[in-house]
Image (cartoon, rainbow, N blue to C red; front, top):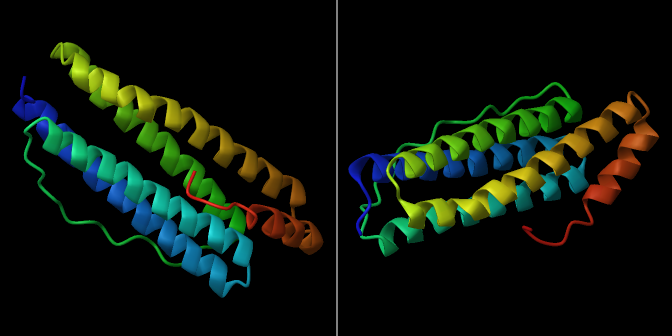
Length: 166
């Protein structure tokens, strides 16, 4: 069964959101690098790679279901931030928005009795639980560090140990 036009359009919109997420995280990585926070820069860069992977999952799924991939413009992300905490809070808030958009996709798939797409989206739903958890924890830890530069540097070193786009 081919994808409905509504489902195809919604998946293409999500594809654009995932690429926008990658751009946003690359911009945040560049900010962290300029602020001499290589651990946060690395974490954000890996996060960007992960988002490209999410986009490619959707790209491949559209192709597998005989859908038409329609690439959309990616909005320019902000490049200036007030602090590492603003960056991480931005990531947390952004991931909450991604979760909401995944849930909307799932609702469309349910309404259309598109069981294949519902099954496909289960992975994304589970992934978003992990994304929100990790970004919330990181934001809370930055809040705990407050203005303590030593704590910030220790946290930077810790987040820099991330080894792959998980």
